[in-house]
Amino acid sequence: MKNYLKMILLFAVFTAFAAVASAQARLTTVDGGAFNINDHKGKVVIMAVGASWIPLSAKQVEFTNVLSRKYAGKDVVVLYVATDSATQGSRNFASAADLNRFAATNKLAASMIRDADGAFMLKQFALDQVPSFVILGKDGKMVGEPYGGIDPKYDVTVPISRVVDRLL
Image 1 (cartoon, rainbow, N blue to C red):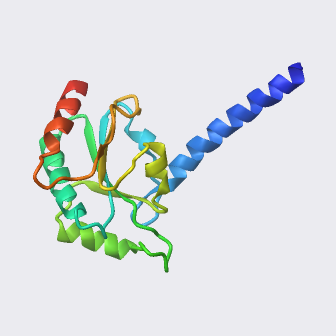
Image 2: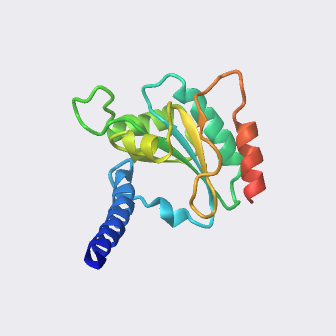
């Protein structure tokens, strides 16, 4: 029985380490470089999760830029997470050049990172729609519920700012 419990414990530890390594591998810079969200622990992180092919993502970039300007110089990191596929031939494929063009066209002020298969962010933060916003506290854990969907008539930066200001 003891050996059985040891095996279960060992399996659980191995699975936890694999999940962390997998999460770190799934988020990259737009050009495919390594990106580790844990590097930002100690800061509040606002992640705008979107895709270049979604029409409302341009409005999301506007909101993201407002937040980037508001929290510049503070312990806040604002990121745009592109969920466009990195697999050529995929229905929602976007090359690095496509994403850079999207960022330039919309004058994105935040750093852009990539969830190359689009699934990590959706699963990790239980997102049911894109575009969405996710806030991570200084401990790296999600604060509250994601802000899903974008209503162009509603300024989502107001409730996000309330949460971020409380965390600072």
